[in-house]
Image 1 (cartoon, rainbow, N blue to C red):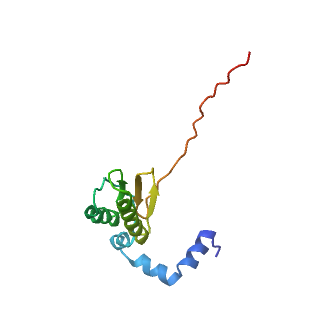
Image 2 (image 1 turned 120 degrees about the vertical axis):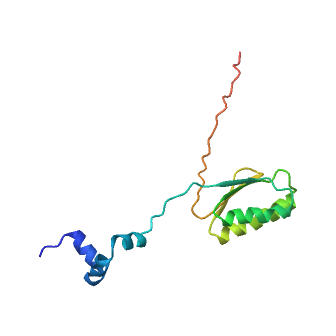
Image 3 (image 1 turned 90 degrees about the vertical axis):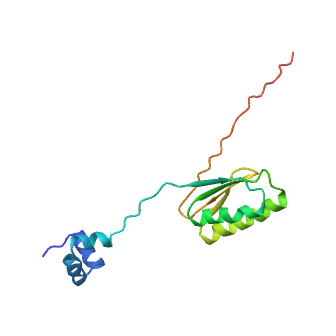
Length: 132
């Protein structure tokens, strides 16, 4: 009996005994065993905290797989560092990341979210004054 590559691979991964058990399952039971991971839309929570009491809401959003964009413009430097450290710790625990957007804006991302940064160089023409 000639076996193709697919048949050999199938028999290696799922021996004949297990394949027979799988074939005996009804269609409904087979569908219940299959899980398809459909990416959902990424939700972004934008915040501009003014004190440390608002940080818990931001951490909860991050734990619920929402990206959190934080503007630290209205916060002093010491409080900014404390909030950033706390949210970076939450992102680390859920295996997410923290990205610096600008001096006062940071984005904290859950595990499967990514941000793509592109830096553009702008050339400014220089004018040389002719001698003469």
